[in-house]
Image 1: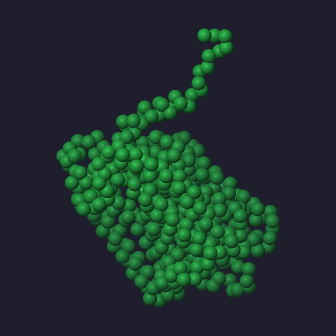
Image 2 (image 1 turned 180 degrees about the vertical axis):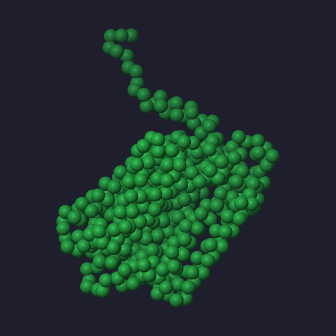
Image 3 (image 1 turned 135 degrees about the vertical axis):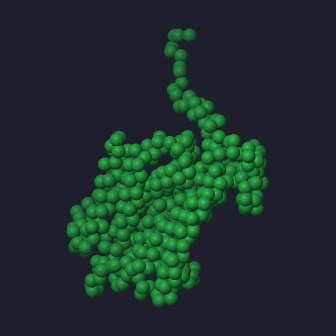
Length: 448
């Protein structure tokens, strides 16, 4: 297929951002890169001066960096996990969504995984995990789980991209060497399709338990200590629910932005936002249930140190963070998503944005108040993040946007071959599947 033939393709809108690299994208990319360079300069000040340039102190030894680590890893559940569930359940409406979801996972996993290294102060201290790591340490489990998830998610993102990469190779899109290398000689034979389908199916099954285990293991870093406010058996599922909740919100925001910027209204239709909006409402209810259960059991037990932290969150120095979290994670999404008039694409965007803010506040609410009220009798300290910490938080956000922008300029953000396959075979496949669900018609006894 040549470039002129491609422009006549009914799905050319999906290739257009790759083929026609507009000036606006370069300006935006340049601006984001400049901001990113400034944040790296700020990181340089931390490398040269040490963690003293942050707001960390005794006893609050974890701050923004660990909050951001848990937050970004949580968002990573958006992609591969939800994509795998939709593929396994053969939900036909998944086709325009899965690739964007999978890209989110790969990018935020890389960003989130770097934050513990930033928190170490000196990056070379990471080697201590390999030199002195202990099998009984959740930190070692964490490194292992995230590495496995990143590897599986990257392969899971790459495999379904091969047919689209081959199309761009064949139509001469530059850089040719990149598309030739990544297409792996794909020509679309029946054997290649069979192998690809089988590989994706195997990864689908593998990646779901890996994704669940990653955030469970992250929760172990907190719950396996005797620190009041952290030592809880509910933290495993609580973290997983929160991760999926923030992940769905991230998918919705990305979908709405790309729909608007690349004019993908014909692919990302209101029905997709309605389905995901309903799923977001379900996760909102689940999140509230786990939050309520977490504080109910703590309050019912009445253990003095536990109560001290709970009251510190409810009415102490952290009350604005706690109640803002409730507002963003429960009140706003419930009002918007349970009201048919408000559940528009704009309303869903507002609800999703509120959830992203609320889930970041939730991570802050878990990490800092507990450290500010330790069991040991140490002088009380207040944690105020420094400009360096804010700059590195901005670095994570900018890196996410920049990486997504670069991806969209080299690869279609919606899987073209899956869209074509759905248009060609989807309706018949669904008809056959529905027919197979129906009860068999049996002949009544005594009647022919």
